[in-house]
Image (cartoon, rainbow, N blue to C red; front, side, top):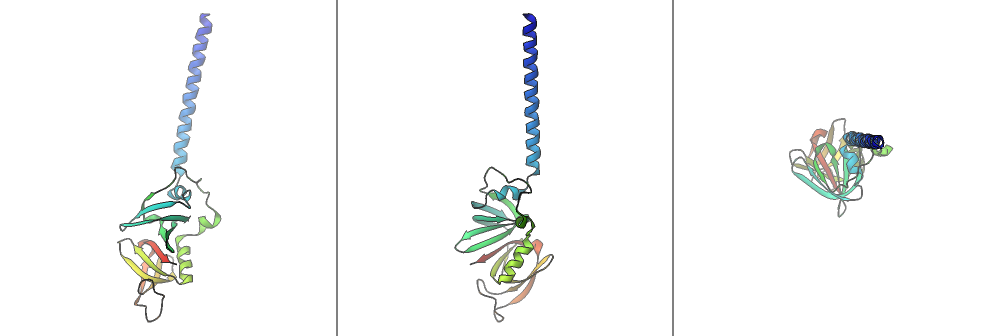
Length: 185
C-alpha cells in the first residue's frame, strides 16, 4: 500500500508539472501572438463601430470607422463628412473591441491601397477638402496632384468648389506633414 501511495503522489506531481508547463507554453505563445499584432489589425475589428481618435497637432476626431488601409483609417463623422487619417499620426484610439483581426488578414485591396492612392482618388473627384497638418494648422483646398512624398493643392475658400478666380495659391505639402484630410459630401 505504501508503494501505491508513493506512485500516486509521484503521478500527481508529474501531472501538476505537465499542466504548469502547458500553461506556461500557452502564455508564451499568447505573448508572441500579441507581439505580432499591429495597431491596424486591432482597428480593423471595429469597422462599423464608433471610435475616437487623438492625433498629432491636437486634433480629435470621432465617427464611425468605415475602412482601414495599410497606413490610413477612414471615418464617417456624420452629416456627409468623411475624414481619412494618416495612421502614422495617431496618438490614441478609443472604442475598439477586445478582439483583433488576424495579422495579414486584410483584403487584397485594403492591404495595397495606401494613403497616396486614397488621396489620388480624392484628387480625381475634385472634392473641396480641409487638410489638417502636424502643427495643428489647416489648409482649405482641392488636391491637384499627389506625388511620391507630397500633395500639391490649390487653396481656396472653405467648402467652395475649385474655380480659377477662387484659387488663392498653389501649395506643396509634404506627406509627412499630413495628419488628416476631411471632405464634405
